[in-house]
Image 1 (spheres, rainbow over the protein chains, first blue to last red):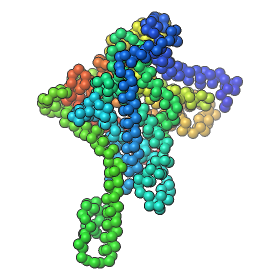
Image 2 (image 1 turned 90 degrees about the vertical axis):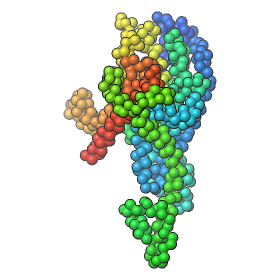
Image 3 (image 1 turned 45 degrees about the vertical axis):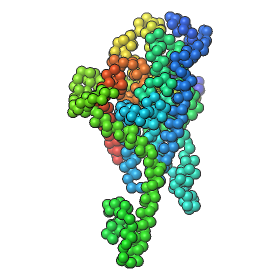
Image 4 (image 1 turned 60 degrees about the vertical axis):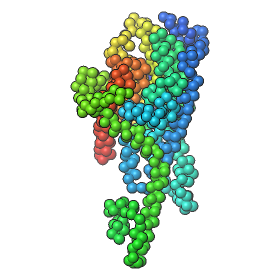
Length: 280
Length: 336
């Protein structure tokens, strides 16, 4: 059936593109509104007759974000937390999954079950005891205090274990004849052939570290240790009363656009990772 | 000697315990068969202990972190939940199960259940129905549908804080885009932030917006797994689009629907914090169970014991939902 053949054209447009267009408008318009408003001067935000495009585009909203919160420090904190946190989590996920699949010890299945149950525990449940632990260790208002409690990774371990289990034994036979140990088999065989799966875990981890809000919100109250979402929460509480939405939209752009760019470029891996278990 | 013989039998529980006993070195019997068995056993034991040290090296750090920051909190929450204790206060009074009784019987506790029920119901039904509609459209073989799929999924990966800030602007009753749109139709904007019922509707709308792409993509994968000849046969039999959907597509999609139902219930109970905290910081009318856990310990009240009790209840609720799902999945595998 050809979508653009004359007899199908009306059907294609009405039942196909019209609903898609409607859905896209609902998804894209709020984000476009955010970006465009972030370049509008206050007068164009407060007006009763708003226009879609900024009439007199300005960068002053972005400068204002920098006045309210130490923007460069906050951005740097977010990058540091995301990079260090995600790197350690990915390494731990790879080695744990490898151990669960290839290193034969009794009880490995029970250990895996324990990791699966951990997958089920939402951060809100462990938040209060972790707050007490990290506070006792002196981790309040520190970057390591943000990173440490989230490092144990159940999601990545689960996903990579599924992947390693599906690797054919033949892959390892030659290396075993050479007398290669587990370290070499992991670094030279299992990891290289699993790069797409590892990329999936890495991307999903990076995005969730970047977006993470609840834990840093609790453990940080000094502005120069805040990550971007926590800094934006501060910005929101300063600016929401005065209705300076241009400034708030500039803040939202800073946290949303980097992820949008990554997602647009690498969506295949991210979608696969996030719908794992549902889509085979 | 008995330990060695026991160890040769893999079914014997001694096989595990004997590995800690060091080698039976002083065994005087000198029987060559026993020697061979012993050598084999020693090799096995050496391999086992080498495997264990490797396993600990590879998986130990992660397991330790999970124990320290997920399991230990689970257990200590149960202890805290039996205390009347303010966060930061050195004084805590044991109160038994009072915190649980309060959560299940007090007006404010029941209000949390009401809000959680409405939020979960609205969020799950909203994202699944809209997700299904979008999936049905995207399932047509139209050029550009891959790009559309990507765009629809995008909000799911965006920062909840950022998304909530954007929608705060849109929902503003005097300056927001929505108030202008409603004004165009001559409708006055509801007081989204002052009226608790509207506030709940608002956060559900934002959650559905963020979440429907996930449902659409999962539904789409389910739809694409349906054999095309079934649909074609039904079309030849002159079954209309509605008939085809309800008699063929939907029944074949049942596993997907069930999976999404369960994950959506869990996600809507656990993933909505960012939106709730940014759009309605005090939680009046929007204090779902996760938000209440936060508000009670880190909000104005600092009731850490009560907060811990709610966290325990949430954990067991999720555990129950997951157990039901696993049971269902197992049954499905059996009867297929």
